[in-house]
Image 1 (spheres, rainbow, N blue to C red):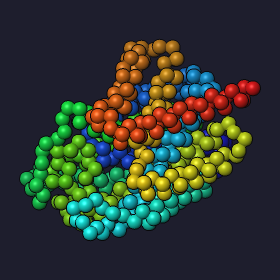
Image 2 (image 1 turned 90 degrees about the vertical axis):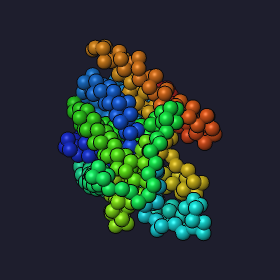
Image 3 (image 1 turned 90 degrees about the horizontal axis):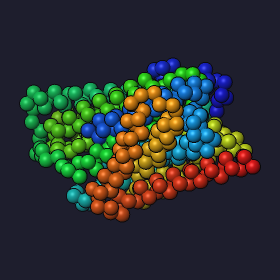
Length: 410
Protein backbone atom coordinates (compact mmCIF):
# COMPACT_ATOMS: atom_id res chain seq x y z
CA UNK A 1 0.00 0.00 0.00
CA UNK A 2 0.99 3.62 0.11
CA UNK A 3 3.00 5.48 2.65
CA UNK A 4 1.53 8.20 4.85
CA UNK A 5 3.27 11.00 2.97
CA UNK A 6 1.53 10.05 -0.27
CA UNK A 7 -1.83 9.69 1.47
CA UNK A 8 -1.53 13.00 3.31
CA UNK A 9 -1.36 14.75 -0.08
CA UNK A 10 -5.12 14.55 0.40
CA UNK A 11 -8.15 13.78 -1.70
CA UNK A 12 -9.96 16.40 -3.71
CA UNK A 13 -13.28 17.41 -2.20
CA UNK A 14 -15.29 15.60 -4.87
CA UNK A 15 -13.22 12.45 -4.32
CA UNK A 16 -13.92 12.52 -0.60
CA UNK A 17 -17.61 13.05 -1.32
CA UNK A 18 -17.50 10.19 -3.83
CA UNK A 19 -15.97 7.80 -1.31
CA UNK A 20 -18.56 8.71 1.32
CA UNK A 21 -21.30 8.33 -1.29
CA UNK A 22 -19.97 4.95 -2.37
CA UNK A 23 -19.73 3.64 1.19
CA UNK A 24 -23.38 4.54 1.89
CA UNK A 25 -24.67 3.62 -1.59
CA UNK A 26 -26.17 0.28 -0.55
CA UNK A 27 -28.81 2.26 1.36
CA UNK A 28 -30.19 3.52 -1.96
CA UNK A 29 -33.23 1.26 -1.60
CA UNK A 30 -34.06 1.87 2.04
CA UNK A 31 -36.90 4.19 1.13
CA UNK A 32 -38.34 6.30 3.93
CA UNK A 33 -35.84 4.76 6.36
CA UNK A 34 -33.14 6.81 4.66
CA UNK A 35 -34.84 10.00 5.83
CA UNK A 36 -34.75 8.73 9.40
CA UNK A 37 -31.11 7.79 8.85
CA UNK A 38 -30.23 11.33 7.77
CA UNK A 39 -31.90 12.77 10.88
CA UNK A 40 -29.91 10.38 13.07
CA UNK A 41 -26.56 10.71 11.30
CA UNK A 42 -26.28 14.43 10.57
CA UNK A 43 -25.54 15.04 14.28
CA UNK A 44 -22.65 12.56 13.92
CA UNK A 45 -21.29 14.66 11.05
CA UNK A 46 -21.59 17.72 13.29
CA UNK A 47 -19.72 15.93 16.09
CA UNK A 48 -16.92 14.88 13.73
CA UNK A 49 -16.59 18.45 12.47
CA UNK A 50 -16.32 19.71 16.05
CA UNK A 51 -13.66 17.11 16.81
CA UNK A 52 -11.74 18.23 13.71
CA UNK A 53 -11.84 21.84 14.90
CA UNK A 54 -10.65 20.71 18.31
CA UNK A 55 -7.80 18.59 16.89
CA UNK A 56 -6.92 19.96 13.44
CA UNK A 57 -3.66 18.00 13.43
CA UNK A 58 -5.44 14.62 13.67
CA UNK A 59 -5.09 12.44 10.60
CA UNK A 60 -7.78 9.82 11.25
CA UNK A 61 -11.00 9.12 13.09
CA UNK A 62 -9.05 7.32 15.79
CA UNK A 63 -6.86 10.36 16.35
CA UNK A 64 -9.92 12.63 16.44
CA UNK A 65 -11.50 10.47 19.13
CA UNK A 66 -8.21 10.00 20.92
CA UNK A 67 -7.77 13.77 21.17
CA UNK A 68 -10.36 13.78 23.98
CA UNK A 69 -10.94 10.11 24.85
CA UNK A 70 -7.28 9.09 25.10
CA UNK A 71 -5.29 6.18 23.63
CA UNK A 72 -7.84 3.54 24.59
CA UNK A 73 -10.61 5.47 22.91
CA UNK A 74 -8.49 5.75 19.77
CA UNK A 75 -7.67 2.03 19.78
CA UNK A 76 -11.33 1.17 20.35
CA UNK A 77 -12.32 3.36 17.39
CA UNK A 78 -9.87 1.64 15.03
CA UNK A 79 -11.09 -1.80 16.09
CA UNK A 80 -14.71 -0.81 15.56
CA UNK A 81 -13.98 0.67 12.16
CA UNK A 82 -12.12 -2.34 10.84
CA UNK A 83 -14.80 -4.71 12.15
CA UNK A 84 -17.75 -2.68 10.89
CA UNK A 85 -16.28 -2.00 7.48
CA UNK A 86 -15.32 -5.66 7.03
CA UNK A 87 -18.83 -6.88 7.82
CA UNK A 88 -20.45 -4.33 5.52
CA UNK A 89 -17.95 -5.20 2.79
CA UNK A 90 -18.80 -8.91 3.12
CA UNK A 91 -22.45 -7.99 2.67
CA UNK A 92 -21.59 -5.89 -0.40
CA UNK A 93 -19.69 -8.83 -1.90
CA UNK A 94 -22.57 -11.15 -1.06
CA UNK A 95 -25.01 -8.80 -2.82
CA UNK A 96 -22.71 -8.37 -5.82
CA UNK A 97 -22.43 -12.14 -6.18
CA UNK A 98 -26.20 -12.51 -6.04
CA UNK A 99 -26.64 -9.92 -8.79
CA UNK A 100 -24.26 -11.92 -11.01
CA UNK A 101 -26.12 -15.22 -10.64
CA UNK A 102 -28.45 -16.55 -13.36
CA UNK A 103 -32.17 -16.58 -12.51
CA UNK A 104 -32.97 -19.40 -10.08
CA UNK A 105 -34.69 -22.53 -11.30
CA UNK A 106 -37.14 -24.03 -8.82
CA UNK A 107 -39.47 -27.00 -9.10
CA UNK A 108 -41.90 -25.10 -6.90
CA UNK A 109 -42.88 -21.77 -8.54
CA UNK A 110 -44.33 -20.56 -5.23
CA UNK A 111 -41.37 -21.62 -3.10
CA UNK A 112 -38.30 -19.56 -2.19
CA UNK A 113 -35.71 -19.15 -4.95
CA UNK A 114 -32.86 -21.64 -4.87
CA UNK A 115 -29.40 -20.41 -5.88
CA UNK A 116 -26.18 -22.33 -6.41
CA UNK A 117 -24.39 -21.49 -3.16
CA UNK A 118 -20.93 -22.39 -4.48
CA UNK A 119 -21.28 -20.25 -7.61
CA UNK A 120 -22.62 -17.44 -5.43
CA UNK A 121 -19.62 -17.84 -3.09
CA UNK A 122 -17.23 -17.81 -6.03
CA UNK A 123 -18.58 -14.48 -7.26
CA UNK A 124 -18.51 -12.97 -3.76
CA UNK A 125 -14.92 -14.05 -3.07
CA UNK A 126 -13.83 -12.86 -6.52
CA UNK A 127 -15.37 -9.45 -5.79
CA UNK A 128 -13.50 -9.19 -2.47
CA UNK A 129 -10.18 -10.20 -4.01
CA UNK A 130 -10.59 -7.87 -6.99
CA UNK A 131 -11.50 -4.89 -4.81
CA UNK A 132 -8.63 -5.60 -2.40
CA UNK A 133 -6.20 -5.80 -5.31
CA UNK A 134 -7.39 -2.44 -6.64
CA UNK A 135 -7.03 -0.83 -3.20
CA UNK A 136 -3.57 -2.34 -2.73
CA UNK A 137 -2.25 -1.48 -6.19
CA UNK A 138 -3.69 1.96 -6.94
CA UNK A 139 -3.17 5.32 -5.28
CA UNK A 140 -5.76 6.73 -2.92
CA UNK A 141 -6.91 9.27 -5.49
CA UNK A 142 -7.39 6.66 -8.19
CA UNK A 143 -9.33 4.40 -5.83
CA UNK A 144 -11.51 7.32 -4.74
CA UNK A 145 -12.11 8.34 -8.36
CA UNK A 146 -13.08 4.81 -9.39
CA UNK A 147 -15.41 4.37 -6.41
CA UNK A 148 -17.00 7.77 -7.03
CA UNK A 149 -17.61 7.05 -10.73
CA UNK A 150 -19.10 3.61 -10.04
CA UNK A 151 -21.35 4.96 -7.30
CA UNK A 152 -22.45 7.97 -9.33
CA UNK A 153 -23.17 5.85 -12.40
CA UNK A 154 -25.18 3.25 -10.51
CA UNK A 155 -27.14 5.79 -8.49
CA UNK A 156 -27.89 7.89 -11.59
CA UNK A 157 -29.41 4.83 -13.27
CA UNK A 158 -31.68 4.31 -10.26
CA UNK A 159 -32.48 8.02 -10.13
CA UNK A 160 -33.44 8.13 -13.83
CA UNK A 161 -35.65 5.04 -13.77
CA UNK A 162 -37.16 6.06 -10.46
CA UNK A 163 -38.27 9.39 -11.91
CA UNK A 164 -39.48 7.62 -15.06
CA UNK A 165 -41.73 5.27 -13.09
CA UNK A 166 -43.01 8.14 -10.95
CA UNK A 167 -43.81 10.16 -14.09
CA UNK A 168 -45.75 7.22 -15.54
CA UNK A 169 -47.62 6.76 -12.29
CA UNK A 170 -48.46 10.45 -11.92
CA UNK A 171 -49.67 10.60 -15.53
CA UNK A 172 -52.21 7.87 -14.78
CA UNK A 173 -50.50 4.72 -16.06
CA UNK A 174 -51.74 1.67 -14.20
CA UNK A 175 -49.60 -1.23 -13.02
CA UNK A 176 -50.31 -4.63 -14.53
CA UNK A 177 -50.09 -6.03 -11.02
CA UNK A 178 -52.71 -5.46 -8.33
CA UNK A 179 -51.55 -2.55 -6.16
CA UNK A 180 -51.98 -2.68 -2.39
CA UNK A 181 -51.90 0.46 -0.30
CA UNK A 182 -51.73 -0.77 3.25
CA UNK A 183 -48.38 0.27 4.73
CA UNK A 184 -47.36 -1.13 8.11
CA UNK A 185 -48.38 1.00 11.04
CA UNK A 186 -47.39 1.48 14.64
CA UNK A 187 -44.56 -0.60 16.03
CA UNK A 188 -44.09 -2.51 12.76
CA UNK A 189 -43.47 0.74 10.88
CA UNK A 190 -41.12 2.06 13.56
CA UNK A 191 -39.12 -1.17 13.59
CA UNK A 192 -38.86 -1.24 9.79
CA UNK A 193 -37.72 2.37 9.62
CA UNK A 194 -35.14 1.82 12.38
CA UNK A 195 -33.58 -1.12 10.53
CA UNK A 196 -33.57 0.82 7.25
CA UNK A 197 -32.06 3.91 8.90
CA UNK A 198 -29.02 1.95 10.09
CA UNK A 199 -28.24 0.99 6.50
CA UNK A 200 -26.67 4.41 5.88
CA UNK A 201 -23.78 3.48 8.20
CA UNK A 202 -20.31 3.72 6.68
CA UNK A 203 -20.56 7.24 5.25
CA UNK A 204 -17.69 8.41 7.53
CA UNK A 205 -15.17 6.19 5.72
CA UNK A 206 -13.33 9.29 4.47
CA UNK A 207 -12.37 10.22 8.03
CA UNK A 208 -10.38 6.99 8.38
CA UNK A 209 -7.39 8.74 6.89
CA UNK A 210 -7.65 12.41 6.04
CA UNK A 211 -5.40 15.34 5.30
CA UNK A 212 -4.50 17.16 8.46
CA UNK A 213 -6.39 20.37 9.20
CA UNK A 214 -9.08 19.48 6.63
CA UNK A 215 -12.78 18.96 7.29
CA UNK A 216 -14.89 16.23 5.72
CA UNK A 217 -18.16 17.65 6.98
CA UNK A 218 -19.66 18.65 3.65
CA UNK A 219 -18.63 15.47 1.76
CA UNK A 220 -20.24 13.28 4.44
CA UNK A 221 -23.37 15.41 4.67
CA UNK A 222 -23.71 15.59 0.89
CA UNK A 223 -23.25 11.83 0.54
CA UNK A 224 -25.96 10.80 2.97
CA UNK A 225 -28.28 13.48 1.57
CA UNK A 226 -27.89 12.26 -2.02
CA UNK A 227 -28.34 8.60 -1.08
CA UNK A 228 -31.45 9.48 0.94
CA UNK A 229 -32.94 11.45 -1.97
CA UNK A 230 -32.44 8.56 -4.39
CA UNK A 231 -33.81 6.08 -1.84
CA UNK A 232 -36.98 8.16 -1.41
CA UNK A 233 -37.46 8.35 -5.20
CA UNK A 234 -37.10 4.56 -5.42
CA UNK A 235 -39.70 4.18 -2.66
CA UNK A 236 -42.04 6.58 -4.46
CA UNK A 237 -41.68 4.60 -7.67
CA UNK A 238 -42.57 1.38 -5.85
CA UNK A 239 -45.86 2.89 -4.68
CA UNK A 240 -47.20 2.82 -8.25
CA UNK A 241 -46.41 -0.85 -8.75
CA UNK A 242 -47.88 -4.02 -7.37
CA UNK A 243 -44.31 -4.85 -6.38
CA UNK A 244 -43.66 -2.94 -3.18
CA UNK A 245 -46.74 -0.71 -3.07
CA UNK A 246 -47.55 0.12 0.54
CA UNK A 247 -44.06 -0.77 1.78
CA UNK A 248 -41.75 1.62 3.60
CA UNK A 249 -38.61 0.74 1.62
CA UNK A 250 -37.65 0.43 -2.04
CA UNK A 251 -36.27 -3.09 -2.04
CA UNK A 252 -38.61 -4.08 -4.92
CA UNK A 253 -37.51 -1.19 -7.10
CA UNK A 254 -36.17 -3.44 -9.87
CA UNK A 255 -39.49 -5.28 -10.07
CA UNK A 256 -41.37 -1.97 -10.16
CA UNK A 257 -39.26 -0.85 -13.13
CA UNK A 258 -39.92 -4.17 -14.88
CA UNK A 259 -43.65 -3.68 -14.24
CA UNK A 260 -43.66 -0.45 -16.27
CA UNK A 261 -40.71 -0.79 -18.67
CA UNK A 262 -40.08 -4.52 -19.10
CA UNK A 263 -37.14 -6.88 -18.70
CA UNK A 264 -34.55 -4.75 -20.52
CA UNK A 265 -35.03 -1.79 -18.18
CA UNK A 266 -34.97 -4.12 -15.18
CA UNK A 267 -31.63 -5.55 -16.35
CA UNK A 268 -30.19 -2.04 -16.71
CA UNK A 269 -31.32 -1.27 -13.17
CA UNK A 270 -29.61 -4.48 -11.99
CA UNK A 271 -26.39 -3.34 -13.68
CA UNK A 272 -26.71 -0.02 -11.88
CA UNK A 273 -27.18 -1.84 -8.57
CA UNK A 274 -24.08 -3.93 -9.25
CA UNK A 275 -22.16 -0.70 -9.92
CA UNK A 276 -23.01 1.02 -6.66
CA UNK A 277 -22.58 -2.19 -4.65
CA UNK A 278 -19.11 -2.62 -6.18
CA UNK A 279 -18.38 1.00 -5.32
CA UNK A 280 -19.39 0.34 -1.70
CA UNK A 281 -17.09 -2.68 -1.54
CA UNK A 282 -14.22 -0.63 -2.94
CA UNK A 283 -14.78 2.28 -0.54
CA UNK A 284 -15.09 0.05 2.52
CA UNK A 285 -11.94 -1.91 1.67
CA UNK A 286 -10.14 1.40 1.19
CA UNK A 287 -11.30 2.35 4.68
CA UNK A 288 -10.03 -0.94 6.09
CA UNK A 289 -6.65 -0.42 4.42
CA UNK A 290 -6.32 3.07 5.89
CA UNK A 291 -7.52 1.98 9.35
CA UNK A 292 -5.12 -0.96 9.51
CA UNK A 293 -2.27 1.46 8.79
CA UNK A 294 -3.11 2.99 12.19
CA UNK A 295 -3.06 -0.25 14.16
CA UNK A 296 -0.17 -0.27 16.63
CA UNK A 297 0.96 -3.87 16.11
CA UNK A 298 4.25 -5.53 15.32
CA UNK A 299 2.89 -7.07 12.11
CA UNK A 300 3.23 -4.91 8.95
CA UNK A 301 0.00 -3.14 7.99
CA UNK A 302 -0.01 -4.83 4.57
CA UNK A 303 -0.06 -8.23 6.29
CA UNK A 304 -2.89 -7.11 8.57
CA UNK A 305 -4.88 -5.90 5.57
CA UNK A 306 -4.26 -9.20 3.79
CA UNK A 307 -5.39 -11.11 6.87
CA UNK A 308 -8.61 -9.10 7.06
CA UNK A 309 -9.28 -9.81 3.37
CA UNK A 310 -8.81 -13.54 3.93
CA UNK A 311 -11.19 -13.49 6.89
CA UNK A 312 -13.73 -11.60 4.79
CA UNK A 313 -13.51 -14.18 2.00
CA UNK A 314 -14.09 -17.03 4.47
CA UNK A 315 -16.98 -15.16 6.10
CA UNK A 316 -18.59 -14.55 2.70
CA UNK A 317 -18.60 -18.28 1.93
CA UNK A 318 -19.94 -19.16 5.38
CA UNK A 319 -22.81 -16.66 5.44
CA UNK A 320 -23.89 -17.60 1.92
CA UNK A 321 -24.05 -21.28 2.82
CA UNK A 322 -25.92 -20.71 6.08
CA UNK A 323 -28.31 -18.24 4.45
CA UNK A 324 -27.50 -15.21 6.57
CA UNK A 325 -26.22 -11.67 6.04
CA UNK A 326 -23.92 -9.55 8.21
CA UNK A 327 -24.92 -6.07 7.04
CA UNK A 328 -27.11 -5.27 10.03
CA UNK A 329 -24.42 -6.52 12.40
CA UNK A 330 -21.78 -4.34 10.73
CA UNK A 331 -24.06 -1.31 10.86
CA UNK A 332 -24.67 -1.83 14.58
CA UNK A 333 -20.90 -2.02 15.15
CA UNK A 334 -20.47 1.29 13.33
CA UNK A 335 -23.27 2.80 15.39
CA UNK A 336 -21.15 1.93 18.41
CA UNK A 337 -18.39 3.95 16.73
CA UNK A 338 -20.81 6.85 16.33
CA UNK A 339 -21.62 6.59 20.02
CA UNK A 340 -17.90 6.83 20.73
CA UNK A 341 -17.72 9.91 18.48
CA UNK A 342 -20.46 11.54 20.53
CA UNK A 343 -18.68 10.68 23.80
CA UNK A 344 -15.45 12.18 22.49
CA UNK A 345 -17.29 15.30 21.27
CA UNK A 346 -18.99 15.73 24.64
CA UNK A 347 -15.58 16.21 26.26
CA UNK A 348 -14.94 19.33 24.23
CA UNK A 349 -15.82 22.55 26.02
CA UNK A 350 -19.44 23.34 25.30
CA UNK A 351 -20.09 25.85 22.52
CA UNK A 352 -23.88 26.12 22.55
CA UNK A 353 -27.27 24.50 22.87
CA UNK A 354 -26.65 22.13 19.93
CA UNK A 355 -23.98 20.20 21.80
CA UNK A 356 -26.14 19.84 24.90
CA UNK A 357 -29.05 18.74 22.74
CA UNK A 358 -26.92 15.96 21.23
CA UNK A 359 -25.79 14.76 24.64
CA UNK A 360 -29.36 14.52 25.89
CA UNK A 361 -31.20 13.19 22.85
CA UNK A 362 -28.76 10.98 20.90
CA UNK A 363 -28.39 8.25 23.56
CA UNK A 364 -32.18 7.88 23.54
CA UNK A 365 -32.23 7.79 19.74
CA UNK A 366 -29.52 5.12 19.58
CA UNK A 367 -31.34 3.00 22.16
CA UNK A 368 -34.57 3.32 20.16
CA UNK A 369 -32.83 2.29 16.94
CA UNK A 370 -31.73 -0.97 18.57
CA UNK A 371 -34.83 -1.69 20.68
CA UNK A 372 -37.65 -0.84 18.26
CA UNK A 373 -36.86 -3.66 15.79
CA UNK A 374 -36.53 -6.09 18.69
CA UNK A 375 -39.85 -5.02 20.16
CA UNK A 376 -41.50 -5.30 16.75
CA UNK A 377 -40.17 -8.87 16.41
CA UNK A 378 -41.25 -9.58 20.02
CA UNK A 379 -37.61 -10.33 20.85
CA UNK A 380 -37.64 -13.37 18.58
CA UNK A 381 -34.36 -15.27 18.24
CA UNK A 382 -33.95 -14.24 14.60
CA UNK A 383 -34.06 -10.56 15.62
CA UNK A 384 -31.92 -11.01 18.72
CA UNK A 385 -29.14 -12.90 16.96
CA UNK A 386 -27.60 -9.97 15.02
CA UNK A 387 -27.79 -7.71 18.09
CA UNK A 388 -26.08 -10.33 20.27
CA UNK A 389 -23.38 -10.91 17.65
CA UNK A 390 -22.81 -7.16 17.31
CA UNK A 391 -22.62 -6.76 21.09
CA UNK A 392 -20.03 -9.55 21.29
CA UNK A 393 -17.92 -7.96 18.56
CA UNK A 394 -18.12 -4.55 20.22
CA UNK A 395 -17.05 -6.08 23.54
CA UNK A 396 -14.17 -7.87 21.82
CA UNK A 397 -13.07 -4.61 20.18
CA UNK A 398 -13.13 -2.87 23.56
CA UNK A 399 -11.21 -5.71 25.21
CA UNK A 400 -8.57 -5.67 22.49
CA UNK A 401 -8.20 -1.91 22.91
CA UNK A 402 -7.74 -2.20 26.68
CA UNK A 403 -5.25 -5.07 26.44
CA UNK A 404 -3.31 -3.41 23.63
CA UNK A 405 -2.93 -0.04 25.32
CA UNK A 406 -2.09 -1.69 28.65
CA UNK A 407 0.68 -3.78 27.05
CA UNK A 408 2.14 -0.71 25.38
CA UNK A 409 2.01 1.22 28.64
CA UNK A 410 3.81 -1.64 30.34
